Length: 300
Image (cartoon, rainbow, N blue to C red; front, top):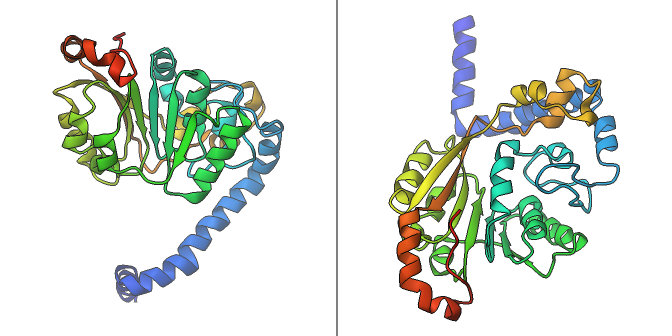
C-alpha cells in the first residue's frame, strides 16, 4: 500500500497538469497559511506598526530616506526601514557615494530603495531606474517625489543589452543590477566591452543558472577588477544584528523582521576598471572629455 501511495504521489507531482492543480490548491495556500500563522504567533504586524510609524529609514547608507507607504516590491520591507537591508554591501556603498558618478543605471529598481537613496547621496548624478513591474515603477516615482529627487530619477520599463551597448554615460558611471537571472543576458560580451570606464555592481542569481557568476567574471576579467561579496544567512542575522528596535524580541521575531528570504546564499560582484585600463583611456580621451560632457574617471 505504501508503495502504491508513493507511486501515486510521484505521478501527481511529475505530471505538469496535476502539479499545476496541486500547486494552486494546496502548496500556495499552505505557504500563505504558514505565513499568516507565523505573523500571528510572533506578533509581526504589531512590530511592523512600530517600525513603520514614520516610514523613515533609520540607519545605513540611506538613513533619513522616506517611504511614501508601507510597500516594498519584491523584497522585505522591515530591513529597509531598520536600515539593515543588504548590510553586507554597506561598506561598499560608503565607498560608492564618494565617487564622482554622473550617471547611475539601476536595473531592477523595485520601489526605488537604491535609485532614490543614491540620488540623495550623490547629488550630481542622474539616476536611470528600470523595472518591468508597473507597481515598482509607480512606487519609485512616488518615493523620488517624496524625497525631492524626482528631477534626477528617470524611471523606465525595460533595459536591454542593446540599450547598455549604446548608452552614453557622459562621464563616470555606475550600473547596479538585480534582475533575477537576467544579468547573464544583459551583460553580454558586447555590452561589457563598452563598460571599460564604468563601475558595475551585480547581484548574481546562480540558483537560476550556476554559470552566471563564472561567465560574468570571465567577461569582466580583462578590463575590470572583480570583488565578490557573499550574502549572510537570515538565521545568522537574527543572532548577529543588534538594533535598539529589536530589543526584547524573540529570536523568531527578529529572524522574520531581519529576514530577506533569499532562495539560497548568493553573492554580489563589484567590478571596477583596472588601473592600467583607466590610465590608458585617460591618455586617449583627455582631449575629448569636454565634448562628452564629463571628465575622465578618477581612480580611488
